[in-house]
Picture 1 (cartoon, rainbow, N blue to C red):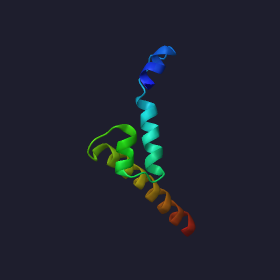
Picture 2: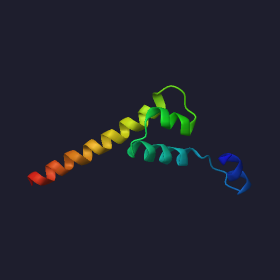
Picture 3: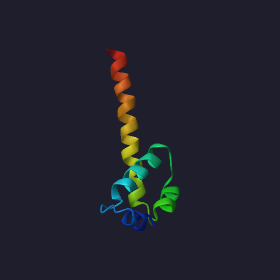
Length: 72
């Protein structure tokens, strides 16, 4: 549906970037693998875990930086 709407609007780009940011936001807000699979139409856990692991890494990095800042 999105691709058709974009085509009708004259947008000649893919929707990959929008899907990526949506998946990133879902993962950062605690979406589960089954929830992300339902939203994005994925099967298995590979793609959802990719985004969840990246979100976890981002959170861990922020937590670690706050510890570093407290020590300064």
